[in-house]
Structures are given as structure tokens and as C-alpha cells.
Length: 216
Image (cartoon, rainbow, N blue to C red; front, side, top):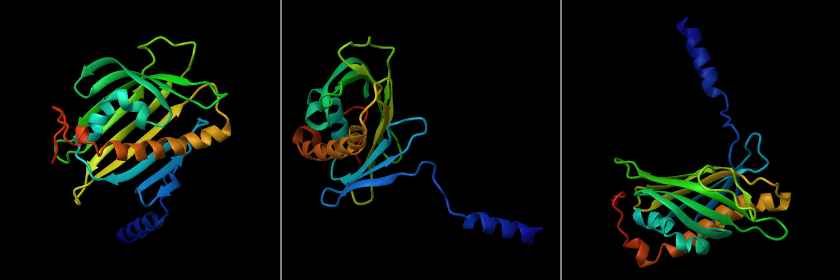
């Protein structure tokens, strides 16, 4: 019996592992250290995206930048405006966001609930974001994004740098031309992370202190 169990164990361990809707590498910039992946989402016309990079920064700096919503249009790709509706708690807020689309596609808006948490042992910081459409009435000038979920993660590594992940999937509603849908899921994480790298160099963010984030 033990012999057959060993045979079965070896058989299953030798099977290839297929991740459900595996990530596909779409774009890479070795100089900036940015990689962008996408994957199909069942029942959705729009792929999910995942951006990855490793940067030199404090853990508080990117969170301070994210909380500085007045500068969001400077670094968040195609962001028209981000306005705080309610500061729920330190590191947690509900915001109103407008996403600008190229003509003749209509601009989108969404209400976003964001919450930052930090692992007390690894010090990794995660900012979860999710659409909350029962908070703010729809605006006839925009198409409301009713489904959106994702996160930012900032994980300190052994080299003293921080590994960054930016992952999101959204339902844009109203339909998007295929050329725009294909570019959105690549250009959004790539340009957002590239712009983040530049803004995070400012002393304003590198020297920022937040009561709910502990640096190394």
C-alpha cells in the first residue's frame, strides 16, 4: 500500500501546475525595473492588470503620496481628479475619482474605499481599494464604474529596498473599444508606477511620518 501511495504522490507532484488565468507579461522596462502583467477575468471584457517594481524608498513615502490626493492627476494615469469624501480613520478614506478617457469615449467616475494596513512582523504595507457605489450619487456627466477592486503592496526586502505591486480589475461599463481596453490595462500600471518613482524622490514624501506606518 505504501508503495502505491509513493507512486501516486510522485505522479501528482510531477504534474504541471496551471494557475487559473495565469498572468502574461505585457511590458517590461529594465532601466526602470517595471513589469506589467495582465490576465483574463472570467465574465469580464476587461483584463486585470498587475504592475511590479522594486524601488529605494521608505515605507511611509508611497502611502503619503497616495494620501496626497491633490497630486493624484500628476502621477495616476488618466486621473482627472481625486477628492476625499470622508476620512474614515488613519489610513482609511472614501474618495471620489474621475478617470479621463480619450475622445469619443466617455469619462468614468467611481467612489473608492481605500484602507492601508501593515503587517507588524514583516512591516509590509498593503492598501486595498474597492468601489463603493452606495456612498455618492451618480453624475450624469460620467459613466459610473460600479465594480473595481485591487491593491497596492509595499514589501521591504533584504536589500533594503521595497518591492511594489499594483494590481486592479475593474468593470468600466458602457463598453470600451478594443484598442482602448487593451491599452488601459498596460498603460495604466506602467505610467502610474513610472510617475510614482519620480514623485517619491521628493523630501516631502521621503521624510513623511505617519502614525499608522512603521519604517524599518
